[in-house]
Structures are given as C-alpha cells and as structure tokens.
Image 1 (tube, rainbow, N blue to C red):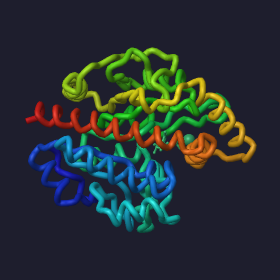
Image 2 (cartoon, rainbow, N blue to C red; image 1 turned 30 degrees about the vertical axis):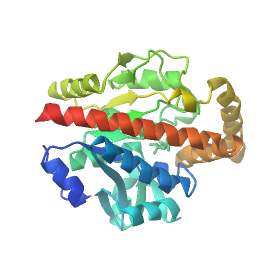
Image 3 (tube, helix red, strand yellow; image 1 turned 180 degrees about the vertical axis):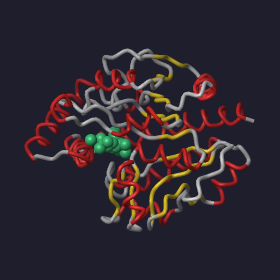
Length: 308
Ligand code: PSU
Ligand code: MN
C-alpha cells in the first residue's frame, strides 16, 4: 500500500479502501466532459460506478475541481463535469496550470493515470485510449496517453483503439515504449466499436487472475510502465468495422476541412461520429465502458487479493 500524495484529495470511501488494501478502480473524466453528450455522459458515469460497486470494488472517478486533484466524486461533481463549459480537457501537460489557477479539469487517460498512481490506485477503466493519429508522420500527433503508459504503473482497461487512429502504428509505438498489450479472451486486437481491427493481439489473456498476475510480475521486476488491457466490445453491441470505416473517413475529412487539430481533434471526431451514426456509436460506447468496468473490477479484486 502506498500513502496517497498530499496534493490528492480522496473521498473517505476511497481512502479507507486503499488503506485496507481493498480493490479500487479509477475512472477518467474527459470521457464525461468531452467524450459524450449530456445527459448520457452523466448517466454513463453513474452507471459505471454502480457496476464497479456491484462487483465488489470501490470506484474512484478522477478530475481536478477548484484546482484540487480528486479521486472519488459525488453526483453533483459528476453533474458539473457533464454540463459545465468551464471544464477544460486536461492532459498531463495541463495539470500544473489548472491546479495553479484553481480551475476545473476533466482528466484524459494520461493525466488520470498519473493522478491514480499518486493516489495509490493501480487499475483504471476507460472506453478507448489515445494513440498515434493517422498522418502522424506529418502532424506529429501522438497522444500523451502512450508516453504515460510508458512511465506510470497503472493497468488501463479499454476496448482497444478507435480507427480514427492508426491502429498499427499505435501498436508499434506501444511495443517501442515497452508497454505490455494484453487482449482479453481473443487473438484479435479490438477496434473500440468493433471486436476485430485486422491486427493480431500481441498477448492474449483469458482470466482476470492472469491479468492481475501479469501486473504483479511487471512491477515486481521494477518496471514502471503501465499495461494496456484491451477488452472487446460485447458481440451484441458491436458495430462492424466495414460500417464504421465510412463514418470515420467522413469525420476525418471534416476535421481536416475545419482545420481542427491538437487537443480538440479527438473530441471533435467523437462528437461527429455520434452525429453521423445517429447515436448508434454512443450506445456502443456506453456498452463497452460498462463491459470494461466489470472486467476492471474483477482485475482489481484479484490484484488486491494477491497484494495482501
Ligand atoms: N478515445 C475514445 N474516447 C475518449 C478519448 C479517447 O475513444 O473519450 C479521450 C480520452 O480521455 C483520451 C483522450 O485520453 O481522449 C485522448 O486525447 P488526445 O488524442 O488529445 O491525446
Ligand atoms: Mn493529440
């Protein structure tokens, strides 16, 4: 057990669970503020916390509020993140400044990993991680999520990587960075909306026990990198890649036309994809986050049991 960093504010529930070595699962907040429309975003955030509790773990949604990095939020906090235009998208490079000015920030995968690690949380559930954008050889647009995975010891459960990114280059980059990429229950690396991306999984695992044991081995060896755990969307909810391809091509073309880049690129693409699929992609997005929450809670339970 690690003592939480003094700059982190934990709820009593999260602090006690960590003190007692009980399972805790971190959740990000950019997905709430910049990844989904209202009110589905706050409903998703609440439902995911409920699922994690029902599985027997403690949820800890992470954000910066009034300049304080927090782990564990209440309904009013979630509502604020879901509705307020004052909540910026905060990745690692933005953390210090939002804290210094006492502002609000929705944390990305990268900054959520960093704050989770400072709180002493090792398991983190999200929908999709950032990666190497298509055309990165010119734009240099590679998400800080990847550099964070290379340096911060947290296991991140996602549904793989969206094909708004270059999935092949993202997998190559993760290999270079020494990040274990485990796929749960399948030999195919999943593509978020779709169960199959056309890329093989680097490593297949078939149980939460095996994932928890891999986390332990990774960190007992003194390696500080995190792990990327890819959990395919349930079959009933998936949108086949053939159907998503056209939508994603169109959203990418519109992004280029609008001249949008930098940190606004991912939120823009996510929003356009929801519009272009008339909400179908949103239903899939919500379903896969819930599915990841179930797996993440089970991993946290096995990890906590082994750490005692
Ligand atoms: N991918 C998704 N949904 C998301 C994000 C990525 O499928 O909500 C969010 C996550 O918070 C992720 C961030 O960390 O976007 C990556 O942004 P960027 O590409 O600007 O690094
Ligand atoms: Mn970027």
